[in-house]
Length: 352
Ligand code: ASP
Image (cartoon, rainbow, N blue to C red; front, side, top):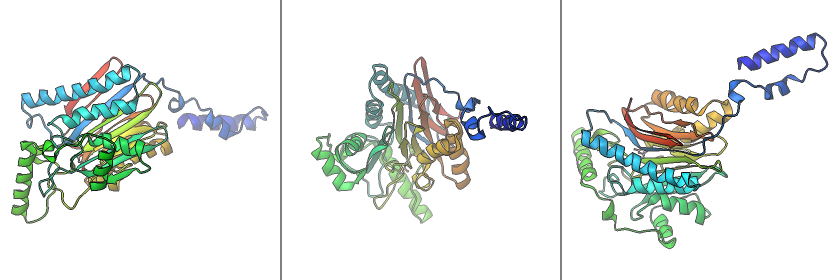
């Protein structure tokens, strides 16, 4: 900005001196060579993931749990990174990385998803491709092994963006996706979390949806940038423990839990979905970059650590831009997260 202003003042000065060579001020502004407009070289590829945000402190996890989560995050990154290293697409990297996280019982997605008040697992997922803003999502599916693949199929094989419930299941079946008995998603840990939530509800006498407490969250998400400059973002979740009435959170909502645009960034969110929907969190990060011309880090931090904090929306997000810059802000105690770029690997859990 200061540079632009200095150039502007300089132009006025030369104009006053009677120079006819001076370009109009607007043209000068587009030729601004200040830091913001210097083209950064894009990374060959980049991938960033999360496994949920919440009350996750060092004291909460045993050393064995800590290393199990780190190992799972690394294994997930290995899958996506290999695809990207071999020249594969961001779309395949995101889908396959999320497959791994959906199969892991550690995370609140696929096998290991949280339970609804009725004792069911209702799964939500979405995916978005940044080239043409194509997107697909499913909400409240109960028998699709990999909801993220159902979301991809909605994007690629249907004229729609969001399918829910029985219709989404019928579509997934017709597309030949893997269908499982709903008991596949059961884990004792999440079942116990539901029982605890119901008991707390009885004690408090009002409906409680649980984001934190003992079950430590675990929505999963992945954003990848491939060698062609395509950015893809995906998110998969069981939602919130003890949810009712076919509640959908932000995860299957494009613009809320997931967003991607090759011109700006890709974003996958985790946190209290109702806030993420109302604050259009994933889209807001992209819009701030587009309209304000600010960096990914500035935009993501503004949304998560200012806007959401002001209103009490807990959670975080992972994002990357077209250069492969990564941002992983959260306003909770911790967030399972990590990223990989050529020669670089980071996996983290707590506020470090
Ligand atoms: N955002 C998810 C939801 O509200 C939950 C989470 O990320 O933990 O459904």
